[in-house]
Image (cartoon, rainbow, N blue to C red; front, side, top):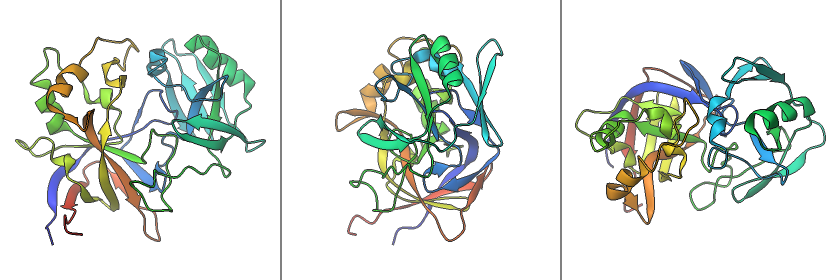
Length: 279
């Protein structure tokens, strides 16, 4: 059996309460089967009930969400805020990628506020007791579930890998372009160690990593301004990180929870036990 390999420690911990909006930096987070608590439990949909993201509306990056008790607060760049709490009444089907699930909406004031700032008719929905979204069975066990994230509960990224990428770019980029949940300090001189398929131990959390994260156009968007910056970093990444026709950065993880849900914290050690090729 292969021994565990250290990847460093957690130096960044983030949730994105509303899919596509700005992230929230944390010092610790409880982990649920869908991912970090409060991560991507809300989503913005169009009039067709299909999700919207920065791919279609880059300005979503400039709206900053916060969880305050049972309420969601969203603030724009001018400091104007909307407070909402969507009750579990009259769930409706919404679509995120290939999944159609039930979600809760109905706050017309919040919908109007978001539509005005994003300059497109949109609505806000959230996950609740009727929402059930499995992880793709190609990579998961039958009981594995995911939030409104693209496909997996947790995304881990390595700042040593980012440093390797930035050495190849004319203008370095920050890690927020990749919208990871867990950022690892990384081992100097060992970029891309997070590519290892296997069993990850992140503080108290055990997780399975068996799918690299294929990148779309979002890393080309400045997360502070919501503006597209050109084709980088994807053009450079594609030169050395194209795998099976897709540009990769980061590792998707699926939590493996015990009887008591774990909490992960800044400074927690991160290690991976590589999968046994013969298994």
